[in-house]
Image 1 (cartoon, one colour):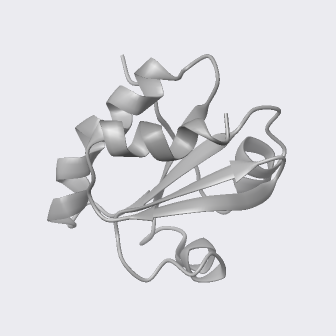
Image 2 (cartoon, one colour):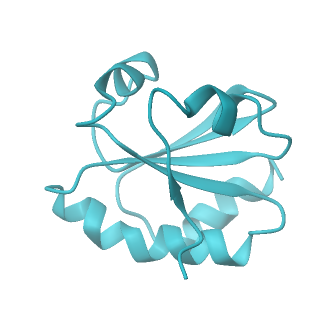
Length: 107
């Protein structure tokens, strides 16, 4: 069972900006090889932190305006939102331990 859900322009405000717990958004695309390599790491983070963090995947081809709004210039990019605000960013395919370490100060 997946611990990540999809989000797009229509659901972004409700699912991400109005969330009562921090949200990690994985900006990705199906044609992006590094994104596909990073997917299991993001899924593992979602599983490990499921009680303290929501994780959503945002396809930049479906919602390019959100990628532009949050200055996503390279994918994969992980952006952490807390209280509806952008608080941190990780660019590139990184190991789950690196993601968790970066998130810990915000959880």
